[in-house]
Image 1: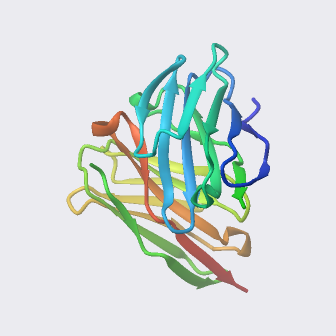
Image 2: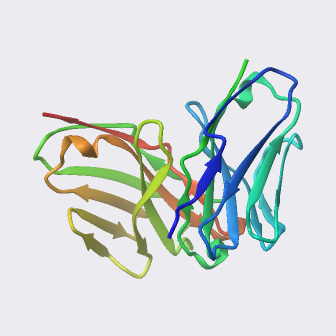
Length: 114
Length: 112
């Protein structure tokens, strides 16, 4: 079974731009969660989608948004980029995290904002 | 909500055992996980334990859970240089929809 894939792996953007990151979950997984990893804040939960609906959201500003498609693929969008958005963005898939099923992570997208 | 804490660094010699510790606050967390992150990579699920278990062994990995003290540990036997990585403890927070709450990560350095 193929693992979680994320594209692109690396991105360089400038302040004020917007960016879209993509995540393809493991086949059969309907839950996709997004996390931001930075040296200062560690791993922080952004949001979770299940069957195309946002089921849970972390404490991030409205510039961070996402969506999930009918094939469970998910995208995350960040608008009006700030220097502090530079981070590793990780996507994780699961059959259903609300049932405690384990989450499998992709390799991440490294976003650098200049 | 759930809070998870870990010590930040651990250094061991190759062949020794490593013990990485973690504490959590929410006793309703029924699943507790250990993830490994190598430089430049995502998180790899190593193992997990249900809250009704005290111990789980998987090859060189042993997880111990003390529910009374809300303390979780990961023991790596015969530690190798390839085990050098950051290890994250994580707990499910059902009060927040089942999202994972991660500790800060413990950087394990294995010296030959």
